[in-house]
Every structure is written in C-alpha cells, then in structure tokens.
Length: 95
Image (cartoon, rainbow, N blue to C red):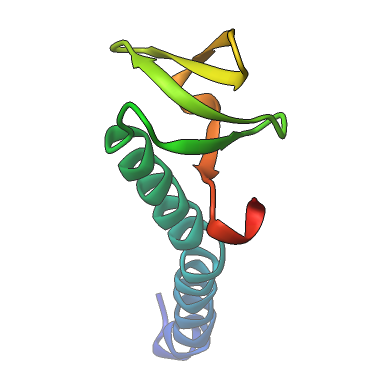
C-alpha cells in the first residue's frame, strides 16, 4: 500500500473509533447504569416497603419470594408481582 493511501485512512479510522466511543457513552453506558440501579432496588426490597409497580399500582410489600412478591394494594387485597415489576419505592410526597 503506498504511503499516501495510509495517511488518508488514519483520519477515517480515528473518526470511526471516536463515533464508537461516543455511541457507548451516550447509549450503552446510561442503559447499563439504569439496569444496575433497578437490579439493586429489586435486590434490596423487604417486607413493609411501600412501592410503585411499572403498571402504576401503589402498595405495600407483604411477602417476598425469590422471583415474586406480594403487594397489598388495599386492605385485604394482595396481588402477586414479578420482582422486576417494581418500578420504585414510594416517596413521602406520594402519600
């Protein structure tokens, strides 16, 4: 390969690498961080926590299983959810 062609190729390769790094920084990294944060939430749930499901139901955890949990959504009404269906813990301002 003549020397001139190699010098023309270097900026294209550098630009491609920069685009990959920017894509990782803008798309893959935030998604990975969000997944880790949600997994931490799911792993730390305990009986008595007030939660909001991905469907928007508010309730209190009354029992925990390995992959599911029971959420009391009204007095005497318990619904079973997959643990991953919990979006977040209820904040004080939700009351």
